[in-house]
Length: 408
Image 1 (cartoon, rainbow, N blue to C red):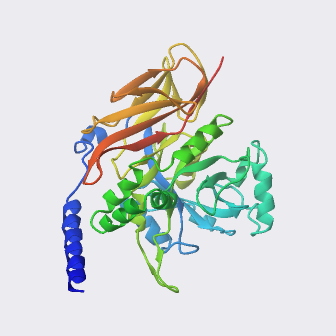
Image 2: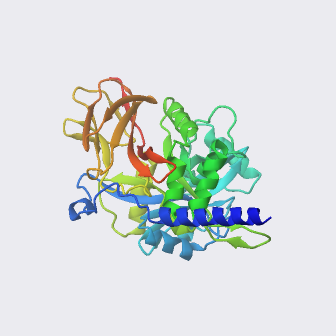
């Protein structure tokens, strides 16, 4: 018994010692930001937001005030509330809270799947658990549907309990390529040891614990699905925070971790628009809504590095083709990727065509010729050195929504 106690004490000492070691670890992918980088590029303005956020109205722990304060602390520009099966969303919350613009939507069980619905102009389709199934079926049955019902995004496409079976409907606007809860679940399924290691270091360095979710792409299935859907029709890709800030203990007791502020810092959706937000809720909502609906945004692992200053677009002579756009192939067409600065670590920009790697670049300002029709999207990844036992690993940093280059 004494040997067992000593063994546990020794293991506890090692855990604390390693915890102190990893608590000192920080990632410096870029030099400290300069005033020139902090200034938005003239071509696009970058505004960051999160989707799939839950309040205490459903599965979350916080009210609107708590959540928007966390969003402000994380320098978000917009957030989307998606409370579970909220058939009476409070549309009066579609406004600014401090500097954060709120979009009120919902998350709805549909068949064996989960749909995120937001940016709706009407809630006529939200008629309760039974009748809404029919309304969603009608909305999803055709690509040329009533857009006043808002965006319909498939959440957690391969998550246990929310798996979509059969063909994907033409009325679906997009999918969650990243979903933080699904990433944790995949981390568990992929390697129990790695999962417990992440849990063990979480109290000491939550950033490192979350980065370990992305050492190997945990969203391979979702990315493959995204590419397949885009080969048939334009399909939006989102990063979903799935934020509850709540771990249930017993009865009505819970632990409010990870906090909203922590969750909001991990992955974000960044819209790239040509004009600044003004602080006028109606006008700004329209700008962000249009950018999201047209795929004029990218999503990134912000906890790895701040991506603001990143831009990606097509360029035909002097004509700019934003992300999400359709354009015809033409001589001189190039895909442009600008990183915000020169990384301090190895990096790659990879351009994919129709889901296959098409070109790579290690230029901060990449210009890649496009000479044939296809669906093009970019990925930027960084090679970072993590503490033992991980070592140097490639981690995906930025994924863009596609551009659709058609034949003449």
